[in-house]
Picture: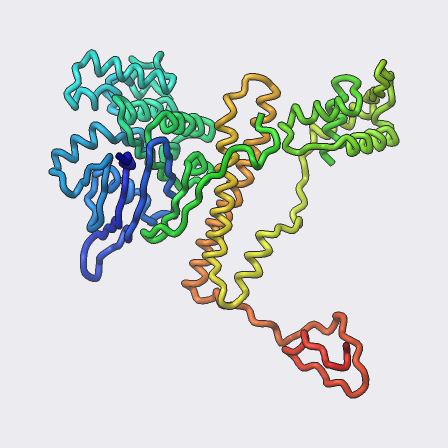
Length: 240
Length: 217
């Protein structure tokens, strides 16, 4: 049996409004993300990057085309089923972290599992494991306001991958961070993907997109080009 | 020139022989700009001529050690304390290519930019993978290597940003209607290297300046 790609977009189109005032955000986009693959989406403002991400994450329904997550056709599912799939399989990372201020780092990470019916103790154990991966075990009981921007984003990454979530959708995750901290966050995202997850990274920053295996360019809602990475080290003599 | 100053700065730590200097330079720059031994000895000869180093001991294997002079140490201090001046007018092949392309008829300049951007991004991906394969620096040697990779990454990123910027600028120019091709000027320069003409050969007319008459061959 062939393994399903984690995510497949098939001829996805999105149009807001109708008639003369209609705005076309996406036109016939095909895209696949496999396990262990990080795909960056680049494009100017208004090119459709964020719309693509919300459609891939089942937050918005496309006007036409299909979104298939782990072999599940979203168009054939009820809203409740889509919500369950989203909770179990997808993790989101946003530019402004979106942590709940009244919850500790640990509670922020364990919340989606508890919402999904996990027993509290098991959810907390999984959340602690996820925080350990992003090197924040010692900040588990801190509230977001006590954490730096980089630490908050690492909590958000832990939340996005906790409990075996397989697809991470990140929208400008380093936008609010300084250069070195942003790089640390990307290094961790990359490590989660290398460990078997898949991911989409929306960014307008080439230096960040370069962490991906493939870079897809959008212009006016269409995929205009794609760049795939070569192997390591052919540019530099001694990558010691 | 940075090779000269770099070798001098290494010698400021203690006497070295030529091959040793090469390995010390590589150790600090991750072999990104490999030097050959001939280049090292030529540089040492010039440094000696300029009074910045002196020949010192010869070891049992016959290696000649070079040691820095007081003037050499002063030059190192001056190098580290002053900015590197980049010459603004260095010819950049890509900038020239786009500048020419934008003036030609029938060129899809957006495509030219996209082809370049994909290639530059692949380079950036490769540098980033190399960086990701390198753990966080835990020694000054690893730190030096990381600084070099970062420099290459930021320079490559700058090219992508410039391409993005150029694309937007071109789109605006096209919308404003002044992105038309630049035809050959009818006001041809008087100077140049005209072909010697024999008596009776046809005169050159504007627009035909690239053609040569049959008598000129």
